[in-house]
Structures are given as structure tokens and as C-alpha cells.
Image 1 (cartoon, helix red, strand yellow):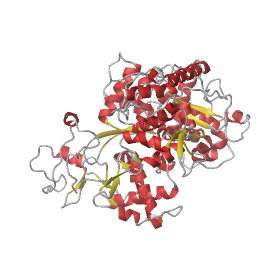
Image 2 (cartoon, chains in turn cyan, yellow; image 1 turned 120 degrees about the vertical axis):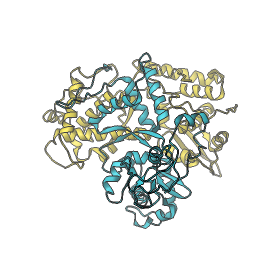
Image 3 (cartoon, helix red, strand yellow; image 1 turned 90 degrees about the vertical axis):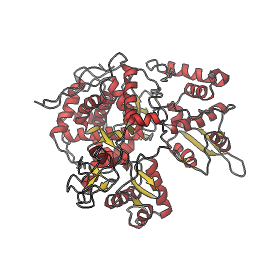
Image 4 (cartoon, one colour; image 1 turned 180 degrees about the vertical axis):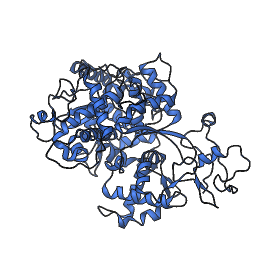
Length: 277
Length: 325
């Protein structure tokens, strides 16, 4: 039906950047990535191999980074991209197809009622403003009276919060809520635009920061995986900004090989390190 | 289901039900009532020659837009999109909007459709108009056309009108071979496993399955109506409300029974998206038996498969069980 190897032509006059070629391998990859929402790197690699196997088993599997950049060059004109992120607590690389043109929480908009969306926005604000990146259930529920739309009772709000957890927008730990890695990936732009002053940023990677470690002297913050990489095998970790001694436990760099060997199943996975703030 | 198996929650699923049935749609609802002459007014501002079929959105696999059509269309769409910073809120205007705004709407609609599909929600035309197209309703046909084009070109998906009567669309894979992407990622879609368990039970029984019977089966998975599950959450709500809302199941009161009892039936969406042969394969996998161990059901599945092939000879034979192991 489609000439599957016909290139999508360059969209910019005089651009030096070549737009990639879309084949059925890439199309199936996109389909499956979209279906699964957010995926870890290991799964993404499996997915890629699967797509090659189905459509072009004789071709060499392209390096994942190039494969994805290739696809993204085609997606650019559609204002979507395959975005790579890292989970804030243990540094796992994750991927999701995100809409760059989002100016509101539009991905959620069709699933949730107006008051539910507003509850999310309120929870989001509490999370961003908090020191730890977590907002307690109590504090969120206390805002129930301020919600737009139909009046919501606290009992109902509790269930809505669970719904957010199930849809992977929030994560719950011991009665406190923070953003799911998927939400951070998808909404980073939106969050930065709507909370330009309150938003925290990692001093190392300059990405949006919800959870992380802070320097007690000068106040800069860094993601746990960024800290892990920066201070790797450094016996005397010092703040990159003010050079004061870094007072927190340095986490381990995420190692996918070690993960797999230990055969830890996803459901009972222990966090590799404790949360520090 | 007589046998119990450890592997009941079969991980070998994909979330995507592939739709082998094509409801041939001769016309397109270009909004509740725009007359066909609207199409002519669209020819002005945006001119990508999208091929011969103006009317039909459900492009059958054998028919493709013209060779020059799509690269030019996509290029034009891309150029327009890049060049013009259109505002996201649609300005109601009697005159045709700038091409770039239509392009932007097509992109929004594309994302909207993808997300709906991801969430297994029905893609309902009136919702598309309300949520995305808005005041550009008059141009929704061209917007839809462009969206279909992009979806086909980039994702290999057909935006197909599955039911003119209910105005429902669905995203259908257009790639060959059309098959379930099993085990591309195992263990990722437990929901599908849960649903298939229930559908299989109903199918094997040959009639509705009482709620009590369903819970007997789910007990095998360690699921109870009163217990919250780490993956599924509130299982009872999931199967009696969410799956019902998504039209995968029907949950109805058993007539003339006191105290009230309820039973499950296949929903319309399950009937459309899942074939009996898939159920047989699921049963075979789960219980490690040959599908012919359920002889009358297997025969039914064969009949259905034959009927599907005859109804649409261009579609592939559904479901060769491709094992990815």
C-alpha cells in the first residue's frame, strides 16, 4: 500500500538536517510505544528488536539512540517526539511519546472531569512547592473545597487520587504523593510554563526537579541520578556550586545489567537507595 | 473452565485489539450536516491533492492516494506548520481559516485519536468535534483527511469509521502482517489478560456468566471483589464499570432472580475487536490444551473466521499465533 521506504521529504528549505526515513519497522515501533505509554529502556530495546524481526529481519538493528533520533526527525513537524527521561528516584531511563504542543494537561483532559483535573492541578502545586517533592494526602484533600466544577467530597477525592495513581500520573508512598515519572516526562513543559517561579531545576542537568538532594549551604538542588553520576567514585563529594561538603548519601548509578542478574521482579523491587533531601 | 493453570494471567498479550472487520463506509459524516458542496470550498486555501477518494475516509488497504499526493501533502503540512505560529484557541470565523491553523488542528486531532486509542476509549465523532475541531467544524472533513494521512504515513494506522450508525472511529493497524504483537512486551498488559479471562468464560459457557462464576475464576488469579490489587486496583469497579464503559463487557441484572444477581456478557467492542479464534488460542495457552478440547466452541470459532474472511477478502487471515518466545 505505502511504498514503505519512500523518504519523508525535508521540511525546511536550506536545512542541513536530514529528515529520516520512515519504514514499517518505525511505524510499528511507534504504534507499540504509544500503546504502552511509558517504557523502560530495556523494554524499548526489546520492542525495537521485535519490530525489526516482524518487518525487516535481515537488517541490522540500528543503535537505539540513532533509531529514535531518526523517528523524531520525522515527528518534529507534528510537534510530537519520543522523549527520554530518567526516573527521579532510581535513575532508570524511560521513554514516552509526548506531545510538545501541549499547553495544558490536555492528555488527561479527556479522562477526567473538571473538578478532577483541578484536583490534579492543586496536588501538582503542592508537590512543586514542597521541600521533598511529596505532598501529603491530608494537605491535598484539604483543598477539596477550592475545586472548580462540581463539588467533591474528601472521600471521593481519595478515590480520584487513586485513579491518578492507576493512570500513572501520580505515585503514592506512605500516604504522600509525587509525580509519576511519566507525568514528569509528559508535562515538563507545561509545568515549567505554568509555575515559572516555583519550579525547581537540577543544577547539573537543568531539567525539571521534583525530588532530589539539596546543598544545605547554598541551596542548589540535584536529581538523585545526577548526584550518582557526578560523584561516582568520589570519596569527598563537594557541592559543585559552593564547594561545601555534600552532606547526603551518594546513590549508586543505575546499572541495568545488575538489575537483570539479580532477577528482581518489578513488583517487589527494592529501591536502590533511600530518598534524601 | 475445568483446569487450573499457574499461568492464568497470560502475559502474552498486547493491548491492541486489531480490527479485522472493515465496515465499508461509503460516505463520511463531515460533521452533523455539512452538505457535500462544502468540500468544494475547501479546495481554495489548502490544495494538497490527496488522491481520488474525496468521500471515503476508510481507505481500503488496496487503494492508496496518488504518488505525488502524500509527500507533497506532508511537506506542505509540515512547512505550513513550521512557518506559522497559530494560536491554540480556535477563532470563530466565517472565512476559511489559514491553512496553518487547519494543519495544527489536524495535528491536535491526530494526538487526540492516539490518546483515545491508548486509553482504549471509544473515538466518537461528536467528541472529536467538541474537544478538538471546535469552531472549525465546517472544515472538519479536510482536517480529518489530513489526520488520516498523517496517521497512515507516520504510524501505519488507519483511522477507520467502524460504525456510521454510532459515528465511531477506531484506529486499525495498516501494517502487514496484521497480528497481535504478542510478547513484544510480556507482562505489560495484565488488563487484557483479565478481560480475556472473563470473555473466555462467557464464551465457553455459551451464555452470560454470572458474577459469582466470574469471581470463582478470578479467585485463581488471587483477585477478590473486596480486595484492592496492586495492579488492577479496585477489580470489581474495573470489570463492572470501566470495562463496561469501554464496551468490552455488559453487566446486567439477571431477570426474575431474587435476591438480585448480575451477569456478564460480551460488549459490542469485544465482539468487534476480539475474534473467537483468539479466545480459543487464549484458552489453549492458558490451559495448555489443544483448542479442539472445546469442540463446539472451536467449530464456532472456525465458522466465524471463515465468515470474516469471506466478508473482507483483503484483510489477512487473523491470528496466526506468532510465538515470540
